[in-house]
Image 1 (cartoon, rainbow, N blue to C red):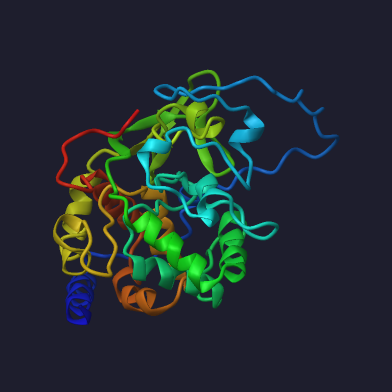
Image 2 (tube, one colour):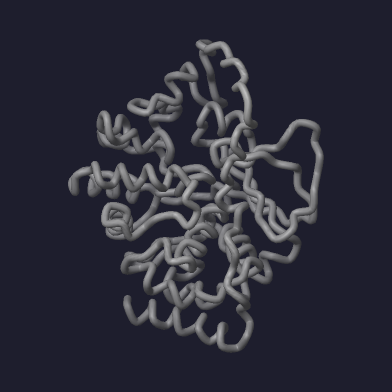
Length: 328
């Protein structure tokens, strides 16, 4: 396995030497989606508490908004879509660890502001949590609050809780969740909690050097936390093809079609925002640890264009041999 990783590093090192890869990136703000602070002055009055029963398509269950966002027992809209959740996934551990299923969903699909954890190798998941715990994995953007929360959660979880969480999410296959669309213009967006959602009015703007990842159905994602409502990723025209050329050696590490190889995770079809954050975090030295050290030579000279192109290509790939589109 180390030999395969070394081959992947050597392959991209050759690209670097040939001048295909350019100067190192500046922080890709679009991937971190940090919300703008509220305007100075008196805060707006609090909205009335919504206690009405909510539903999502395909589920016979109903929950209130308070139940949906309960950090120690969030709504599970589709219990039949996943194995029985361990206690730490379903309910967390008061007062220090919120339920894993709240942010990452019971099916491990996650959202653009966090990580998709379904289908990760158990050993990789455990190593990641230990890296959080040992101060080896942080965010290059200090305002990325959920990364700071993950550090605190990892420190509060026992080795057995980490292992059973890793085994639970690792038992599920990663399936299509994100639809990549190349375009020159995108709807104007605002970040709410790290999720890009369109502003009212339907205005459009040039896409520039970024990927705009947004829910297919904003309310179902942002408010209802529907684990069957996927994402659309708008990418610059031509980025997928350019990314294919840049990523051609990645299969030595991440396996055929980038679907994983042994303890190395599959990256095909995963969030372009997440993939870009990880590449930049490693480039900036915020993410360290065993696997990150092996990736450092690969990402060292990636430019902002490179990050966009690689993420667009990798996210456009089918994560399995299935040909179905993301659920929505």
